[in-house]
Image (tube, rainbow, N blue to C red):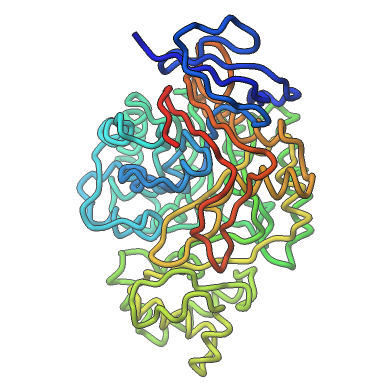
Length: 501
């Protein structure tokens, strides 16, 4: 006989965005058995939720915890997250094909991994990640960069027909085995070399399986609008569902592009394109420092990169291209993680400050640091205005995500604080949106958008994934200077009927 648990006297945010209401929730094992007013079973355990919000377990629809979730890491659990969508931005831990070493070389900057991971298929990865010991339910996208490496290695070129066919086969197999969608990272090599014809072929497979296509676009700065247009054309030509990842206008000079970007998305939506986007509740972003380089530099992997960084003619060429495409100032780029102890003191300093300390130009600082650390440097980027952030978060087509990833150093505070930051600082304190709207954007909306069945709502028959928090005290304590502090105010996290917190 399964245990019955009554969450009694709470304020229910059911995930749909409708106004809050008071009521009880009955859990019977791993299922929601009743909601509202019902006779309390005599043997049920009672959990007093008076003055607390009872919500569906939060869904992080853009996560990079692909490997750490296998380790039982609890950073997301402490925020109320019970489901994560991994495999974003073109990075997934499968398929490895005959290029396992190249796959790890490609993805370890985002995955914070070692030299021993890798799966041949979605089935193998999902079987391991969704074990009974997992701290969250895992839903995986298959990454275009990983897919490309599996069939061709780390090549920056137009792929021949046989390689495209092989990618279509891998993609179809992943969907048949449980992957919920496909992601691209078109600012990361080797995916950045894919042409429209290649992406159309792959997105047609996505549409055939009625999955979702999520994209880290080619540009979020000077060419933001062109990047959005490219993705809308892809969706229109193939019929796939389009999700634009971490939408923002990067750089002070580009802030007026934000409204025009939203207009592009709204116009496409009005024409019938199945389009939405996501964003995180911070003005700063985070990425690998190799993202500053022209992406042709990364073809061939780490050893080739080291050779190019040591060649003056190549450095001059890189610098010329880099300075024409960078939307940030050097003072807006902060080293957040670094591979060696020798340079550990640089964590927390801007590239402008490090260049001054080293008595060199900032571009040379970038090249030298990447040489010294064999490419293993992460940065924070102060990208967008608060006004644009608020407008994007509140947009009816916006899902709110963490985009958090692990690093060997200081992570972005979103890894530890996204959801309490949203519900505490932005909803309660600053009144940016209502609680029911915020909950919808992290539960019911992502569940519906990504085809995550049986989750995201407080409904009879749905999975017993529940987060209970105190609306008066919930807050993130994670800051850019001290980003690993756990949040306050999350009281209970239940996944599949089991209390994890």
